[in-house]
Length: 208
Image 1 (cartoon, rainbow, N blue to C red):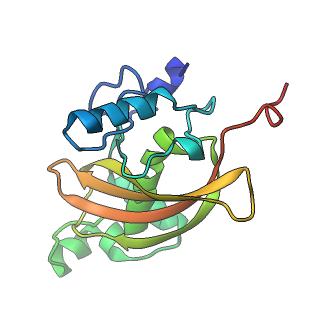
Image 2 (tube, rainbow, N blue to C red):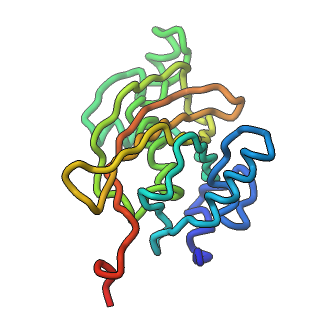
């Protein structure tokens, strides 16, 4: 059973839609058919979650799309703090006067690496918390539209591929396609990510 703490958004983050149970909104095959709905319902009936909420390798279904309930309004502080922490002096992110007078944007752009991290971070609570061994890589990173301070981000994750590990019988590799949108539905970021995922624990691996 999922604890109440796992159903509650963290801090000031708010859900885009009610999530009475995190098992309801996880798998949307977007088929719009009885077969698709039945497949989604059946897949969710067998999902085993880590005590922190993550999904094990066996339970990820290729073709599934997860609509994440957490959203985040990005701020000037995000831009300033992230750019400072990464030693990035780019005025596109930290100098409002520069942006107003020397760029076509007229205002600061969000640091794209912050946007990438936020998009992946939003996905973690519904997918990999407690069940990932580590990231293996990211490809096809794109930022098709600008994101500005004051915009609100929501995200989806599609399971695009999975395979057994060739070196570890207790793990597998899952390919996620993350997408981030701002409040008007504009796609602002996307990334394909490979994660090394734990399989369901067996009686021999469960601590007594």
